Image (cartoon, rainbow, N blue to C red):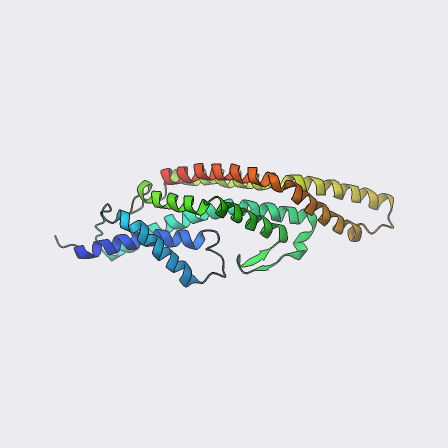
Length: 259
């Protein structure tokens, strides 16, 4: 029987599959998904990482597509796997971004939201601060090395060509979203509670002393209290990040097992 492609092209097809998954990871991985990073640079990084992984997999992968359509389908499935892995990491970083934006909402700092080229949208002050802070934590503990090792391991757990999505994955992702939202609320809760108490106090002052301009006087007070609470809570950020990192490792392992 005549093969669809010559034997000497088998290794190129394997490399394309590795590259397809790595492209999905790089384009959604935090830091590399910033709008300010040129696309050609991200493609170059994906090419380099794919080549490093390909060198250890080329002799183990057996692929025999029956036509061009099957090749395209296999490539698309690999891109989806990579996008899913990168999206899972970006979700963990968005926990701190959302926590900061919740604090900004209570402190009135949403008025200072500006367009951020790295996100391609408007981001508040504390949201961006928390996001960059956790990114420094991540790089400081060599988290990018751990994640790239996990991506390399994914080629063993989710062998090429990748399977279709598992039905169990949809239900599990709902639990992941719920946990991440709850963690973001827990991080922002101390500041939000203090600001709620301040709002109640300002409301009582407005009722008893109508001459006081509560909005004019209260906004700087709430911003100052939010910044003070932010400084007091910074040591606890390490514990929150460690908790998130442990859960992320478990979710990443579960994600690759049920795919």
